[in-house]
Length: 300
Image: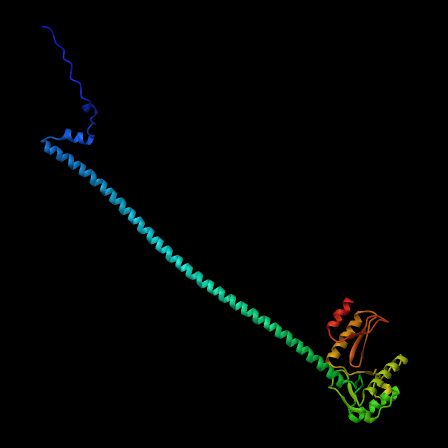
């Protein structure tokens, strides 16, 4: 009897395309022992376990994210607080700076006002000094000084008047008692004779005596006016006749003499209570009315 070969039936396309069960499910199915209902239950338990594990991880991540957010919020809150403090401090500093700036401006205004007032006061003082100087110079217009005259123990006003008349006789200028308004010797000076102040009744008498004394000393260069001409007891001493200067005038005249010492050919003198300088022989006379005039002389 002939042998009959059977061809195995072909697998349907549906069977070939059916995906393979998950390993997890396949393993569970292979390990399942029992009824079909029990195997299905075991597969469901495995799926629930995996879902619970994923949810735990997700919750943990959520908690970590929440903690990070809380930390960030806390840090942001602290940062805002610090910024608020800095802004408040900055506002106070700005306010203080503005206050100091206003005070500085006020001080500057007061300083400027003080400078203006000081300048005005200086001008007023200068004007008053000039008026006082003019008044004092006019009051001394008819006054002269006799310097280096030896003192006597019995000296009084009558003796001083007689002394002035003797000076007039030597200079060939007649002086009457009525020509002398006031005469006195100033306070004593240690180791030096105090000058005699003589105020005449007119300026012309004073000027006449001063001019005559200059002429006398010029003509008698080797025997200038001295104490022997006045028949005074004691050693021979030169007698000087000069204008009675104001306090300012005496200072300027002293400075003028110092200037003459330091500048060869210069000369200085006084006339009508004023101080004059000539820088060189034959040069113009320069009036010295204030200390600043000496600085101007140096620039000429």
